[in-house]
Image 1 (cartoon, rainbow, N blue to C red):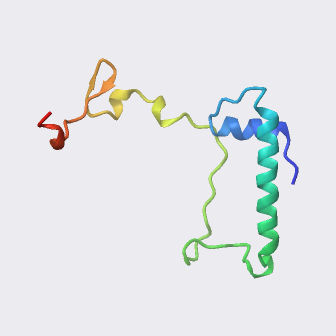
Image 2 (tube, rainbow, N blue to C red; image 1 turned 90 degrees about the vertical axis):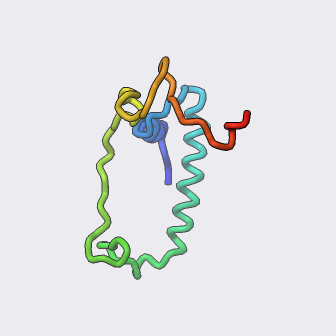
Amino acid sequence: MSITREDVERVARLASLGISEAELPALTAQMARILDHVSQVGAAVDAARLDAGATWLGTEAPLPLRPDDLRPPDLARPLKSFAPALKDGLFLVPRLAAMEDE
């Protein structure tokens, strides 16, 4: 399977990865090798035995797919929305009982 530079850029954008121009050729080659390996594994599987409506854990419901949408990373939220305690922008955590003697 061939993979293009644009494919690598799209995957990087979906994964919120910053990739430099210098890294693109190496990543394109690596992803092409990965996809070639996956296709070899796929060729070894008897596809005729697989049902197009594959189910999840033996249930009748098909496996749900998610759209390829860009989402902000979870840490894009303000720290106060999920941190129990903050001081000067740092997380405050309780002391460990094992360190009480120090």
